[in-house]
Image 1 (cartoon, rainbow, N blue to C red):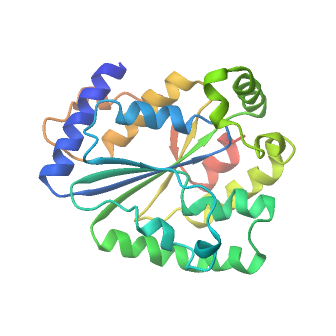
Image 2 (image 1 turned 180 degrees about the vertical axis):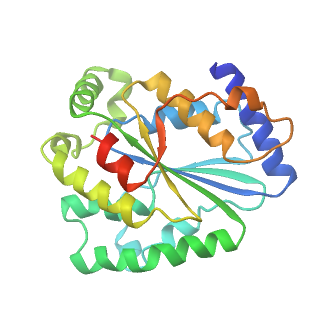
Image 3 (image 1 turned 120 degrees about the vertical axis):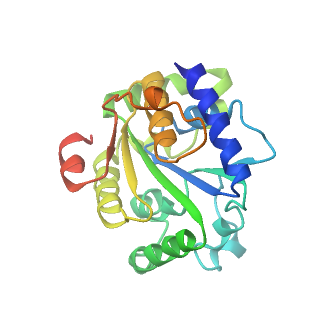
Length: 242
C-alpha cells in the first residue's frame, strides 16, 4: 500500500512543480505521536530540491524580540515547492502555553493574529493543510520508554519528554482550544488517531493526496477510508480525542 502511495506522492510533486503550487503541510501532535516517521515516509521518494522539512529549535534571544511569526516566514514554500513543518507556529498554543514559555498576553495575542496570517498566505496562493497526530496516554508512555532504550533514537530525547505524561491533561486542554479556535475554512485542521504507526502513515498520506487535485490521480486508491483522519469539528474533538 505504501509503495502505491509513494507513486501518488511523486505525481503530486510533479503537479506542484508544473503548476507553481506552494504546498504547506503542518504536522502537530503530542510528543512521540509519530510526526518524524510520517514525514520521513512522505518525502522518501520526492525530489530533495523541491521538498523541504522545517523543524525549528528553540528561538534565539534575537528571535524572541521579533514578530512571533517572523522566523517561520523564511521557511514558507516558494512556487513549485512542497514544505512540511514538523511543529510550527502552533507551538505557542501547545508546549509554550503548557510549560509557561509564553505570557498569557502573548498566548491571547496569537489567537488574534493567526487567522489573518494564514488567510493572507492562502490569498497569496499557498495551500495549507494542518494535521494533529493524537495518541493515547499508554501508547505515549510506551514510545517514550522505547525511545530511551534505542541507541538510534537518542537525538529525539528531550527534557520535555519527562513531563509529557505529568502534563497530559494540560496538553489535552491546550490541544482542544487550539483546534476549536484555529480550524479555519481556508486552513483546516484534521485530527489523526496515531496509535498505530503504519496505519497512521497510510491514512494520513491517503488523506493528504485526496485533498489536492493532480494529473493521473489514482481515485480508486484514494477512495479508501481508514477511519483514522477526521475534520477537527467540535463533535470529533469531544468524542474521538484522547
